[in-house]
Length: 74
Image (cartoon, helix red, strand yellow):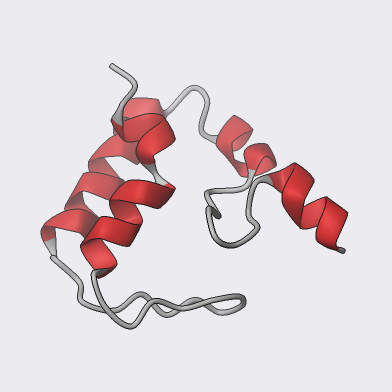
């Protein structure tokens, strides 16, 4: 499983949106970016995931880190 999570780009400490899921949104990047920016705008303190590591503090910063691949794309 470790090699799959590494290949998918979701492994801690630098986990991101899975590469295959990114392809799902390839034609809808503006909508995805808007949704991510909306989540960041909520300024969450914690991010609790259904699986894997969760983040007890700095939730908005973790979202920025995890989704930097699309937030920095302009």
